[in-house]
Amino acid sequence: MLQELITEKVITYIYQNYNQAQLKQLEVDFLDKSDGFSHYFSDWLVYDYTIDKQQTYADKYLEKVENKLDEKEIEYINKCIKSYLGFYEVVKIKDEKIQCKNLFTNELHMIEKTMMEEDVNLHEILLLRLTLGAEAETEIVSSNVVVLPYQFKTLMMGQIHEGFGMAKERKNYLTYPQYFKENLLTVLQIVNRMLSYKDQEGDVTLYQSVYAVKDYAKVKEIFSNLKDQIKDEEAEDGIYQLMEDDLLLAEMVLQKNRLEVECSNTEDQKTTKKVLAEKLEGIIVHLKDEELTIDDLI
Image 1 (cartoon, rainbow, N blue to C red):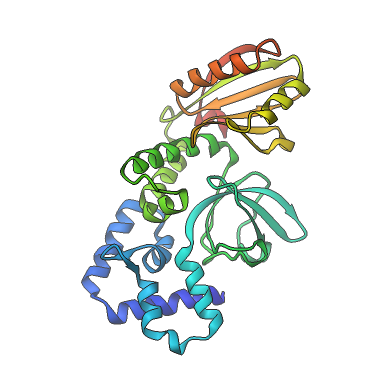
Image 2 (image 1 turned 60 degrees about the vertical axis):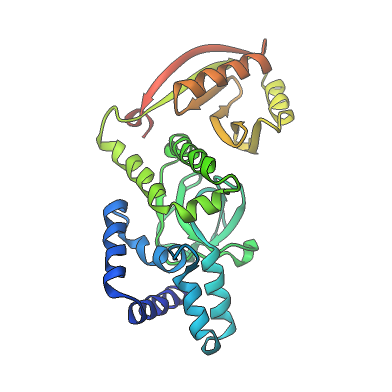
């Protein structure tokens, strides 16, 4: 891909003009902390890592050689500098295009199927780096894409929301794009834990509450009116998110006669049950609570 060639040009410049020992140490530290995600190192080094906490290597590259580059190359590098490795749910596949939604900003992006080597299915989670901007202009930065099963969504989002909340205590103005850009290694460690759960029974539990639905239309109406607490971007598929401030409390799946509510910990489960008991009194009936391991989910 042309885009990968541009990144390679910047990488070559970096290794020709900066301290080799320091660069090697950065690589060693990255590989040690990102276990299994070595293919993300180049993009992280070029577009995320900041020298003296100010400029990226890509910024430095543009300062030195911008007058030798064509306009499209400059534009692409500037887009990449703003990019970050994020999580995207596949919400539509049609006409050789994949529409995906950023799980933490809810922005929609359209990707050409030809940009991806992986086969993807509806509702799978993609870990990839996209250039930002109009849908038609979205590009994948390099071809490094990890595909995660939809069943990881609630657990993964809960862990990332927790990490974001702690980081926001130190930096009040922090946004999710900034968090992913500044804490890529932490995010990759979360993904690694999720992937390892398949082989480590009991390491993770999803707390699920199941309800019988007495009036499906009324539940949908109430959910749609609680926009300050409930996100309904996937309401057509019956998927809702219960929020508390900016934090995810529960993922909810509404069917004609059944409501499944998934939380990543018992405290969120208790809070969610209180909210639903108050808002949906008389139109849902609690059936059971379950603790599901990752083996039950996959």
